[in-house]
Length: 526
Image (cartoon, rainbow, N blue to C red; front, top):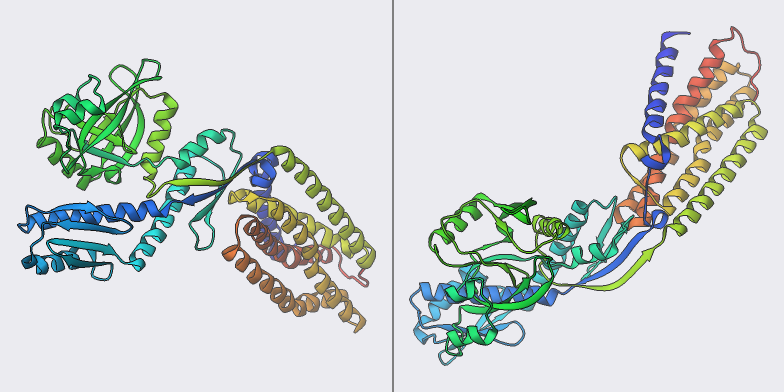
């Protein structure tokens, strides 16, 4: 055996060996998709109006703050209908100031303002509102994807449905649907706010009316009342207390660098967090300026705890409450993945049982075996002993397909099985082209060795063209298709590469190996 033949054989052995190693054991190495393994199918709708309303509120606070910094200390703002708010107490001489605030902080194309006496009515433009809605869906898509990935769902599909406000989520192998549902839906918007008076920040209970009485029945414009659950040692809610907190949040969950489950001073589950450098600086400034006041840790507009600030805190802290271990894990996960920009509504939810997957796998295997058997018989009948060459190449092709899928952690779906079955039929296509070329060369009077050389050389361009065009179609399916279509495209693409390798490289090596063991070959069984 010459060195070229030996090296080629070693290469084939290494490639097939790596594929076999990657795929073994088959039931553990191949990940199954939703249609085969079972799981959850969800269609969610992002409440984009919430995001627009939040943006209007944020802009209103910016205008009020900047107006006061410009010397208009008497201004106040009232939220209007739709995308408007009214800034009151603005003299006519401040029109230039209003224009500068719009240009610097809101955007001239995004907001319009009109004067009515000493009132200035601000209105967000439709194009700006549309952009906020689109950004809200994109951010929600990324946040939900992050949460599901950190939860550990294998190969989920989370995509936006066209340009709508809807998101499709397919989660294979989920065994706790309720936990996933709450994990996705939780807005998890974290804020750190200062409590407005000591009584509302203590451990005693306070009713809403008691807090209002503290302000003689009228809350200041920068203060609001939030609820806080009171729990017993076993974590059950036994009462509700109310706290007055400042509306302005200097530090939010967006400033977190990390959040993780931990244990508190008395071994109770807590959430430890750390800030980004910029967030840490602002948190240090906030706590330094408010020592001996309550710091309300607000999650989704509910106060989780309100400890008293005893000293400056810079870069880390804890969220303490009557949490279970699982609640701490889930809260850490959603804080780390980011807050949703708006609420989520479930439009459709289906749970796919694994029994359907089992039936699909059995039928797919049966179809694959039948197809494989028919191809084997056809090759033996048409090409006689040379057909064994194609059968060996076909067997190695199947091993390579599953090996590549396992190596890259791809998910096998029902359309993916269809792609593999199609690959079985296409895998011998290249062999057929080569064998027919060899037959033509033999009819022309060439020797078997010369006919094999010419057959492979002349058929190569046709084989590559046919497979390359199919690969282009598969890539388009993968780029623009959704979950099942992409699964089909993946197995089809992998099958194309594997079949070209086996039909051209492996099949030619088998021919050369057989010819090298005989000094003179007079006839080829083809």
